[in-house]
Length: 203
Length: 203
DNA sequence: CGTCAGCTATCAGAACGTTCATAGGTGGCC
DNA sequence: GGCCACCTATGAACGTTCTGATAGCTGACG
Image (cartoon, rainbow over all chains, first blue to last red):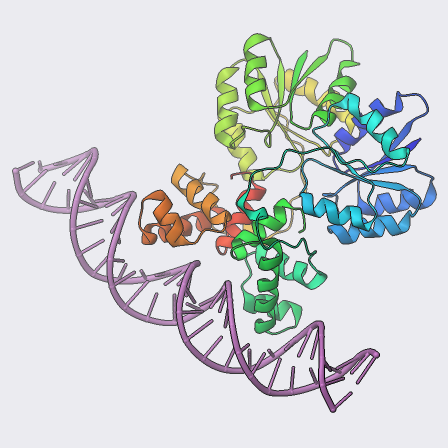
């Protein structure tokens, strides 16, 4: 079983790879950027990719989709400290085979990977954070590209007028998009939307 | 040399500990919460603590200070994926002995720790992200308690009126505090301030 | 043709950011 | 004590920005 660990935390990725490679019939390789991951997937055969969402070059679900398309036969598994449940569901719909939290005990990693290799989708049970957000109007709609652009600029402190100029659209449209973003994220205002999107690693 | 790795990413902490412990005269133990770290420091002798800032219970610099006070003779080293330079400087002033980025190559870890054990403060060179923020009026002033409260509530989407009611002060005062926060963080508005403070792990 | 989606324009009201003036408290100093 | 400087808290006012709603315009598509 060949595992590719795609994580820019080289220190930890290599340590995990060392530990995994001690197991019989298992070898692990490290990539530390999205570009490196793509290269590695093109040039070698892997059974499983442990994919960190915070690597350089990663842009949320669209990057996950790129990896899935690049390596159709490979089990893509998200690899992250914490992850939003709805984001994870969307990823599974795209074809992701599961999620390995970095808080998992090391001794569970080997068997988890073997389970995924056997064809199972593996998502460990996670105690839900009690939050008033998950109540009503959340439809788990993913953000489209333009919404992400607006969100990123807003998170950099730009006002609507500046965002409009940067994106070549009208300020009215920026407001409409921002409104959509808040609805999709269940946020109360732009500050909240920026924080929520960061927590879910969308931007 | 006894090393305590304090990181709630158990998977990675244990893998690094395994890797470190292969070295001659070096043993590593893992703690996965602030409380566990404090307990471990009380009951055993350590030379170095690798302290992650995002563990359960951690509250920014105040928690770092608690660890320093609990273990006066131990080299406390921050352990994080990325870190704000000014935050790091403040931590060093408190007595922290350096910083190990998780993006460091695994083979450099051993020698870095030995360097710190020898008495050196170790902060790897980090290419500065070109940013127009670091130019003028940033004085690295820490946020006081009330400013952090306002910031947390704002990051939860609350408006000034609600924040004022929650904190038992006037809306005018909330605005003044928010203004202070933006100045200290070099942020352009509240959305920016919320994002910046999250990046620096202040809230 | 009608429908739908995306962009724009406009409006009103709320919230935000800034400034000024005022009042209370503290501590130093004659 | 009396005075002053300093800091913090507050209220009011003002312009800007944001939010939400509405309506018109365009082009694509069946």
